[in-house]
Image (cartoon, rainbow, N blue to C red):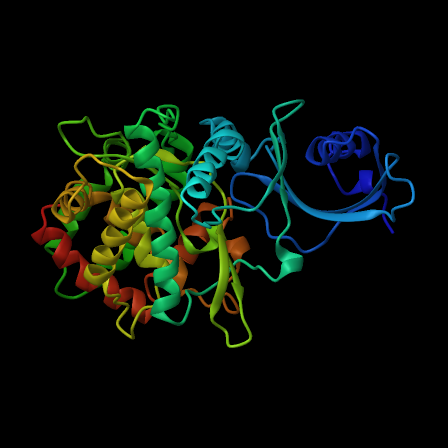
Length: 411
């Protein structure tokens, strides 16, 4: 077996892991017996990720057998490359560390005070900025959790996810309105990162344009689309900026609420038994329209790529209001009309998500390679993205949506 130090970055060594578990267990006598990195873990777009199994014992309880702890280590990239460029452009790790160490505990405490059992995230084991930003979470894989490739097959399972999103939003709204927690630090958007704008959004939009010009009957949309894609950064920054009190309301958004950032655990009947949200690197305090724009991608669609969005928005609002009432919130509640105004006002973000993110939910990964998507070779990456828009369901979805975008004044 390879030595641990040959598999992990030099600073993720025995001493580091020992400090982490001592803090987690509140036991300074803990000693690491052995540890090793597991193989086959999927890389993250803006982090270096490692699954590690750690065996340890406590001198405080010498008669007890050694314990095993499976963890996921999420570390800030330290080498040059696309990942480093993405991370260097904003406080991704600082945001996630604050989420796990301050904000999620505050939200969990609110739920507990109201007798609500709401699991938002994997358990935090340790977080530090020294010598580099690192987050260690409990690995839920051994408990049967996995990152899904496709949405839950049953709409009722998907509604459980939307319910939890509404609860999460409601908790942040309550804590902000009652001045119990400050969310003002959550103000970063990837749309201010030139590397992300150029290498992902503009490249993907350009790939879509090359397909769009081949669609008969859609010629009139091309100049509209050209004007839209030149202002991607401005559109994103505007949508991700917190509303002023007189203009609307705000919640803490997960910020990257796509399917791969939800861990599923299924029961024997292939129904959703439990789930957790992960990857809080770009959580942002602004309009709830941001997370709700992602909802389209986590719901099972029909053969034409459609989902019952109006019904789901009503359901989300009902759960949002129900949760605020459970907290004892006595002020005026955001109405369904208020929510729909937010969705309409910030609707341009929907275009970006449906063109740049949603098509990936339709990918058959047995025929398409992740390596091609992440390729630094511009032509190779563009060809991968162009294939996305040739998937029949994606084509049908976008052709139907483009007319709607125009009618709503987003395009």
